[in-house]
Amino acid sequence: MKIAILGAGALGCAIGSTLTEGGHETWLIDRSPAHVEAMRRGGLQVDDANGSLRVKVRAATQAAEVGAVDLVVVLVKSFHTDSAMRGALDLIGPDTLVLSLQNGLGHEDVLAEIVGRERVLAGKTYVGGVLRGPGHIQRGVSGKLTYIGELDGQITSRAQAIAKEFNASGLETRVSDNILGTMWDKLLINVATGALTGITRLTYGQLYEEPILKATALAAVSEAMAAAKAAGIKLSMTDAEQAWNLAAEGLSPAFKTSMLQSLEKASVTEIDFINGAVVRWGERLGVPTPVNSTLVACIKGIERAMMDQQREGATA
Image (cartoon, rainbow, N blue to C red; front, side):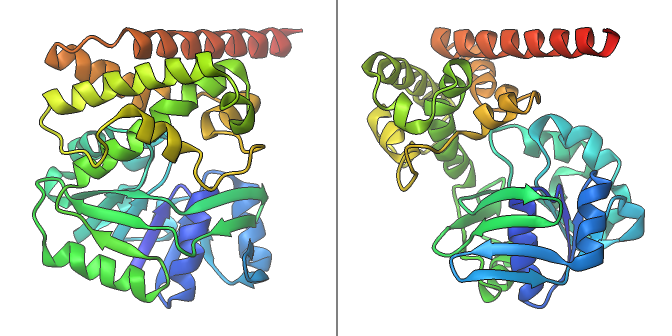
């Protein structure tokens, strides 16, 4: 297959390098000229459980360099979904499929407006990646599941074909007949910890030592579960405690959530597609979400303060 990874950051490179090693013509598309140039010049340095290796990858900053592909895997930050896809229409041919593996909810609707709902598949991945520097990542693929599926829950030959190719490359993938439920399951985990660590600046170890923060996390997850129930979403979890426990499973006490990492880099977060998605679904379905609304407001306030500081620094 000819595959484009739209958003070749840590996770995009982890998945893209695995598919490259599986024999696919995989293009890593990223906005960072330094990152792309490093990959073009010396390949992608990949550190994983088996050691360190260099993978010869195809990399580009512009979709026009790549042309039409069989599959676009979207892994840009949530708030860049619309602009990134609109800027990458050169990737879309007559039979191109678009698969979102992003965190949160709502990307599939954004993508459907641009390329047509009939092209869009949704998914969730538990693959891990850390960007060590331009052209250098740490990859966690072994034993990490990826789920993909059609938005209407049908098991189709096209979804099965993608899963077959992913699996053959070493990216363990399952086709789900309840991909929206799978996405909500992952959302619950992000709701449990992301905003709280962003606000408090605590690592996982510190967060889980504070009973009052656990109570807040459980309240936020309970609101999300109520919204999912009202929407008719089939979840695998039956209580908020499960999401709280799963969120930290297998992670070191020093681990930081992606939301906290974004704030530490003075970057805008994905709050609108995580806790913000819970608030939107709650408003739509008449489900109260006061805890999630408060968490969203606090993160928005931190983002505002960050932007003001950046402006002051630019004019100083």
